[in-house]
Image 1 (cartoon, one colour):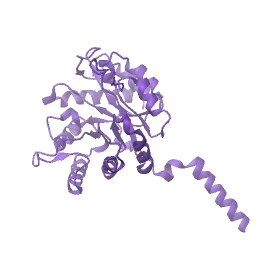
Image 2 (tube, helix red, strand yellow):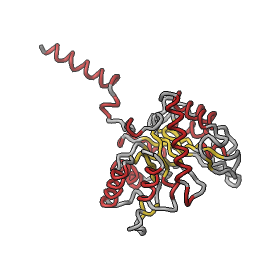
Image 3 (tube, helix red, strand yellow):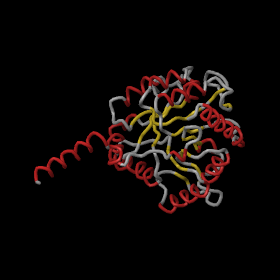
Image 4 (cartoon, helix red, strand yellow):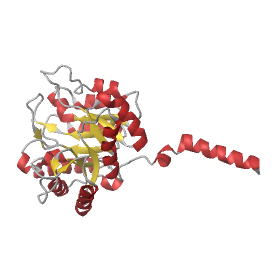
Length: 294
């Protein structure tokens, strides 16, 4: 009997180590109910930075989005415009946002782009905030804090995506625009650390977004998906399928890679009334995904 018990326990340990890591770690995943056209698509709240957090949630729902990615510093609500929304928020403020999300049937999935300090105690505030909201991931460009980030990723079981802004002519030391550099930062780190792929900023850097996705294959945590009117730094957002980013190719490549993160529309044009165009973008993904039977 004792030998059988030892054998049984040994087999359980083998299952734990090989077969069921995600179940036992409680790995964060975005529910299928949040998906439209095969993707968890919604808005980066920065799209509505002329408005409050509460209004951004409402506008995301109006556009047909099911998920939202917050950013630090947005005003909370028309009733409390002096309250800023970030990882220093009080439990009461966090609960107000949760209640607003529930009422709008929108799910918070990501937070960024946020600076994460090297100092563990300060960095922990970002992760604790993300965990309190039930987020899937955090978005940052804080490469200098990678060791701290890796430690906290393992502790909190959250994903972190390193974001890219455009190439800077006056700042040659800025390298995040280059997907090869981002890959060099994340490739030997915990698998939950990867890239937040911003297709619009690649276009502004004269890069082809689908080629950038392929460079980062297997390490894409999330995406800021954009279609722009032209290549180059002066480009602006346009509804999906009408610009130069080749949105169908990007969606296809993400699916081929088994991408399971959030797709955030960060529409940085027609700031005061972008909801109809954001709705067109979400409709494009819905239609394309349905046609592909995703």
